[in-house]
View (tube, rainbow, N blue to C red):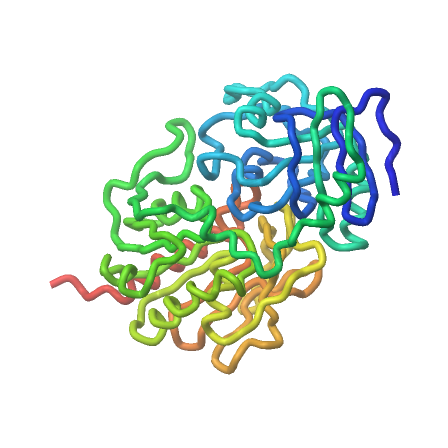
Length: 389
């Protein structure tokens, strides 16, 4: 399968099966090799590109208006883009937004990220849905000259995300404190001045807005690297432990993350809350398994049903692996399911303040239907606190 090329293509996307898509390059020049996924969100392209969960992936956006509001430092979810590149239908237009500081193309170029526009993204999305997330090579070359055989070979040579531990690559290298809260009009970001709960957040690739939501829920947040041990966690005398989102194969990350989580569960009664990869880490620690999905869930419009209340929440998602609900052990309850495909989206331990969700209650981008989960975490910690004397 080869899509028609524009008159003067300066970018080429080669799939491992030999399919070729031509377009107009923007951002940085060069070549990126990764897994290709599609994202259905209508907003938040900058947050998506800087979400650490996209390490090892190139994102094709199904929404055509990418780049129209420019970029700004406040919307970064980490210091630099983590996604390897992007593919869009229309070339970015001049930005039109009062918060814009830099056009998307310039922002990508400054950060070494390759992008291409002028692509039939509907056709590309259908290919991903039908065949699964392909391995691809994306090249932006200003002179329009491409070594197609080398591009296809590079795509075929990509090892894939299965068995790949990427959390170590995107995690912080040393601990730090976080007190910035969620953005609010008209002052923007403010700081938490009177925290009530000490939380250790284990960083498998944490988005900044997750940390902001914890701070807004009254938490004094200390962030630790992905490789933190039980002793590292308990040295901070936390009231609760948070397990963050992140990229890669949960089974690979679990080799060092699961022993720490099991120790927390076995040796303490602390509340534990996980999101995305943190959800998968908790499930593995409880004895369940994870599986690679065909093309994953990536977008800000995913309906999830709360099995306890019957409520349907519209959520933001970004994951290519899932917890296998059929392997949940006795004493672990499935709390949320995707209404798209029935896959697991949440678990909890019976009788313990320990739970996790696959979706992103912090959104950024996306709806905020599930923000209550941060408040539930804060309440669980408050319920364990000794009564004031």
